[in-house]
Image (cartoon, rainbow, N blue to C red; front, side, top):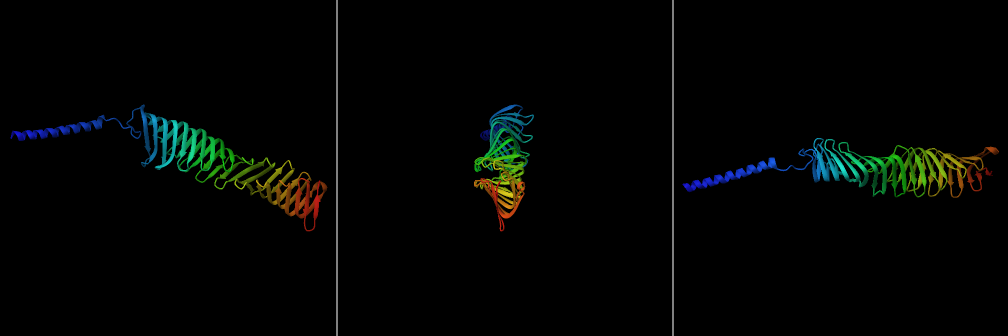
Length: 376
């Protein structure tokens, strides 16, 4: 009987001991365990310092907004702001990777869902593989807006395209980037340089455009063009200029003025679909037409519709339906309803074709019933 009682006491003792240990363990886990490092919880005390941490933030739907790694962070609980150093970040939109960035220092604002980075910033837009550099960058995740200031540089290696400026406003989720102040756009192939005070790059649609004055130069041929606004279709290698256009080829000494021009960089062709004026001061020539085209490589200008060509050498004017100016040969050929007038000599000659020899300073008008060679 005593032996049975002792065994029961032993079992009871063991049960009580195990329960006691479990109670102590549970109490330690609840009340005494160290806090977990996470900016998503409010366990941090004001000004607490954290080392080598990863900070995550989620949107209202539980999707990842960002993942930030930092060697050091100081968390300000009262404002829900973390100051971080030596930062590496991955940014997301609707849970999908959007951008990766690094910087010397930064600030994470939980309340506004905003991240600011400063110093030696390097970033890449994941979708289009666009590289970015800046002195300071702010990402407002709620608005899907990225802003950067300082020495901005954006480049897309696959397109061999680089843009620089002082201020950037972008929507990385749709790959639209607007750069302002002292903007320079450089393309390697074909070699082109564009300057303006504001340029927008729609990377997904391969468009670069601006609604403010723009200048462009084809580096190889030195052909220069300015306008009030312009749009560059990167895939087509075509730039459309609008408003108060002035084009100059210093090599050929030809200036063109128009309200619209389309420059095909690959074909080296400038199309003028509206009335325009072409001038060569050294040759004493002014041509006008309703539309035309300038072939840069062939050094040729074609004019169509209500064409007029005036020559200072003969003080004469040729009116025609169309005209071809081959600059290297120093010849101008006009066709259709030719009227040649030379007021100082009271000349008025009509025909089917007129050929002007700029070197000899002569104009020859031919037709079914006329053959006239006029000289000063």
